[in-house]
Length: 467
Image 1: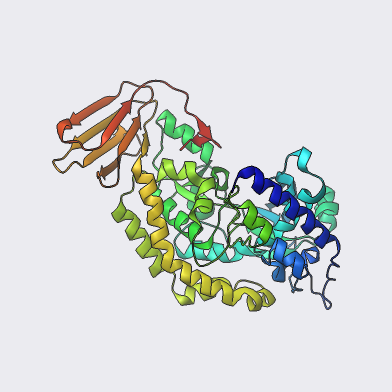
Image 2: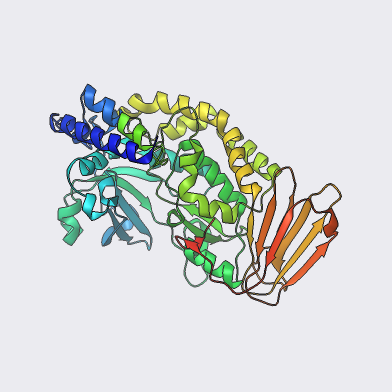
């Protein structure tokens, strides 16, 4: 559909949807200590057709939740500062035991991502309503699925923030709100290991700066692939570089991924309005049997293109096999059982069935990504002295080895064989430095290999090289 016509259709649908929303009467909170997280998401037949069933039945169903005991967790929690992006408010706590905890409200305000000139009328109401497309307790399930795969994520708990004087200046804003509480991983001090045995933790932006400078830049890219496979499996489209940190772990080789904020896992934008917008906004995914890879790849495209380029098909297959082996029915049931009882009854069967079907289709979807990344990969050297070896073979394949010219502690040498059936052109940027480049049997190369060695300013997407 022409984008202008699509935009007109969306505007008309949004106006109708707004009228449908205004006519609805929100549910009241349940009795007997129960709480309804977002009663305003209740819609009638017309509203549900236009705006989607999404996960409304969970948002509007009374559940029992425990109130957070600020004196008990971590030896006692003291609020430090408000955190979070535009859509999600959070509160950071310092714990008496030296740890750090984060409370993140589950009610997202998607309209806050709109530019100021659009934050009014039907479009604001529409975006605010689409918070119902998120599963309100998604991190409970995802954190367990991730840990089953050996990925370093903290467990989460769904709680109600108490109306407690210890909240101080944050009491009015956060008292009574429902949110996820999790320990925020921190490195140790003075050489001692911290959470997960972390000696140091970096942002994605700092990780790239070290890579570019030629410092301690080895990354456990297979662990990153493992985490991305889970992202695709659970339908988490919001995996941009700021959703990842990187830890140097005692006893593990390479920087380990620390994925964060899986609020968009199981996202299900299934109404007529979302369907009309989807060609322009592929991130509005549905949690159905098929994996919508265009939307699931978009936000993490830069990280994927940078970090996954060194892994061949056999390594992808090995990680897929390992994921399936660690995703048996018992583990799936254990993850789903972390939901509140009422939500487990409402959504447990759907999650179990769709996760099972999506697991069967994950290999095909993942290899679509693999083939796209392999078609014209881009390898990044550093501003230090790099060593590049390109060796061509009679069958047209190319072995590439890229790493430091001199041994550097923690630095990584990438090695991979590229095959003409998968790769048309390989680009290698060595940047600044007195680099060593060796080419062997170039006449046999069926793949174009372009090598650039010059000081340039690397274009960045959220702090990492553009894909």
